[in-house]
Image (cartoon, rainbow, N blue to C red; front, side, top):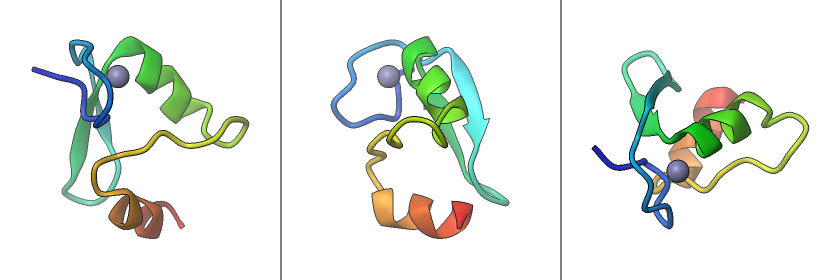
Length: 56
Ligand SMILES: [Zn+2]
């Protein structure tokens, strides 16, 4: 399975729950970005606007 980040070609290693029903599969690198999203800029998911609504 591929990482859910559009421009990323890495293999997904970590499923991340981003909403009530939605999950994204992230590689190690993007998983770390996701965990640190308050400190760094958030990664670009393919459905970026939807993602933004759910974390706010
Ligand atoms: Zn990735």
